[in-house]
Amino acid sequence: MLIHSASQVLTLAGGPQRGTAFGGAQLGTLGLIEDGAVLLREGAVVAVGPSAELRAAHPNEESFDASGRVVMPAFVDAHSHPIWAGDRAAEFELRQQGKSYLEVLAAGGGILSTVRATRAATLEQLHAETEARLQRMFAHGSATIEAKSGYGLSLESELRLLEVLLALDAQGPWDLAITFLGAHAIPAEFKDRAGDYAQELARNWLPELKAWWLAHAGGRPLPFFDVFCETGAFDLAQTRMMLEAAKQAGFPLKLHADEFDNLGGTALAVELGAASVDHLVAISDTEIAALAASDTVGVALPATPFGLAEVHNAPARKILAAGGLLAVGGDLNPGTAWCESLQFTLALACRQLKLTQAEAIAATTINAAAAIGAAARTGSLEPGKQADLLILDVADYRQLGYRFGTNLVHSVYKKGVPYPVHQDEFSTNPD
Ligand code: NIG
Ligand code: FE
Image (cartoon, rainbow, N blue to C red; front, side):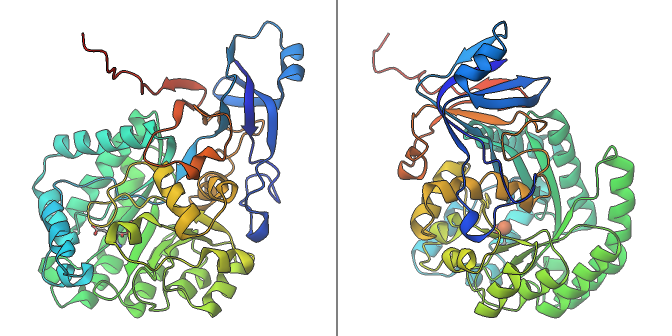
């Protein structure tokens, strides 16, 4: 299949090394080809180049005329909590009336209210609700999605969430990068005993989790292990203890740090070689330097402060000025950011993080892929990589980020298979 005559093909190729993220000032190198074409075979990209060249070289190829449209790598959402039951609309109303997120959590609401609803849900219900969310994410262009557990908070209920995520990954069309977030909050059974919960998780759950994964995950590598290092969740010592145990057991690491308060989580994530450290609103200058000197990707989540109506955001420009690897993720969750459109998050990144459209596109494709260890497979259009791409209903990539609230995706190609996104089914002509 030859997709040709695209007004622009964004390859996102040419990173410092194939399959790596763009650092600092390199972010925003789009590898733009005007009047471009992409040749796909057996789910992979075979060639990318000017339309005239590829059409002359492959005259008999089945083709799609993308004229007037942008072709770019599919988005990678590097951070999401897509599996839960219930909603927190009533809590949002309380927050609108002045209660803070951490106050609601301390009073047994917040994450803990979603935990109650999630524990009470059947597997079928969790599957159906999560599938619907993944479909909406996919239709907005996210073809690879990091997906965290974390609303079970007992070993049994966390494994149920992993079971559903594994089934949804096998089902596709999306690829999921699964993360175990048993350390998302302190469950009611361990109220005021965060240290005991952290010990229980590190000593008793980790070996069982590993054995369960090896028996159920069909040969997939171990999931990421993540902790919410924050006031009201886990302190730095508990976070270190859990991350070190997980690393020892062979799990790749991620960390939620600096969403509200700086507890030193970013420095710890860098020290332990985490794949990513996420949120970063309260990151310090020393930690920015440490992050920039490392291979750990900093993931900014601008939908979260937006969802909380907070004004502070990750200092993305400072991270880039220091030469750091920056990605942007969606943070879909029922508490702070129920947003299934990474295009909307990208628009926030252009405003709240002061990224250009090109930087925001790289931060949600190739750099996001690096944040989940998938940059060798997806996130750019290069020969040999998966044919995960978007055709946009616009002629200039700068429409992304500039416009918001409308889905600009015409179709999503996942491993070479096209999924049209129907936006025009509504008509104002009554009949
Ligand atoms: O990334 N910070 C922890 N987790 C989510 C919020 C989860 C929730 O409130 O349910 C976040 O913002
Ligand atoms: Fe999160």
